[in-house]
Image (cartoon, rainbow, N blue to C red; front, side, top):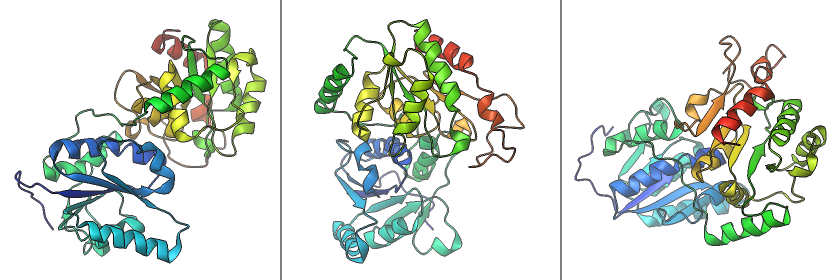
Length: 347
């Protein structure tokens, strides 16, 4: 196993492998930036899942994005791995060691196949390793790159919104009653895991309080597949519903990001919109339940995590509440979030 790579090392082609989820792929972009800065003459290719493509689109640091299509069958997989083989990569980096990525690393033919210390049964696939670090996910991932003389220095996730995306967002928001000089926040009140979903009643109370305290403020509700009815219910529970906007059609990932970029701030649960908010430079308040903030919070004062002080009921990282009470989420009151929003967003 390679434990030292000389500073004179200079690969021509690099393959970066990060399969899922959307937020995790976005959190790998600081490492892509660091690789480009360390090896400015190298071509950087990225392998990810098809659904994650939107957060990498238009990234000028990436020469080519290869996508895993799980519905493509054996012929599709063969075509993908054969295509990777023809590229003749010098360096391949795997941040996850999932089965499809292990195959990609194997087929890449790269002379240096880098990852975090692998289990014994994966040691034939990789020949270089460096441990992940503790803390914020991009910092943790960057530990793998330490062997290349690369260190993370507060580089945030990157998502490139172009002029077309921005013009779409401006036109769309105008149709929703949000002009270019309207102060508005994006609200992400949904989550597929109950232990990471602040109660709907709390969101409704927060929305009422935000709009009562700020007559000119508007709120744009974010939602994903199958979640529209959830946000409509929250809107109906709140007062001043005419200033709480739920779009008729679900936005795409890039459309959502373009909207977030124009927003004055973001409030939500611990899910991918928190990471896209960081990437587009929008301040955020995140309500944490079962998830420990450290790995997911960009360590800057413009991005705040709210969580209970009860050390006996927080950060269990479980998908169901053993107590059945969701105390860690109920402990965060709408008044607490309102005070933080008024301070952080100056509203």
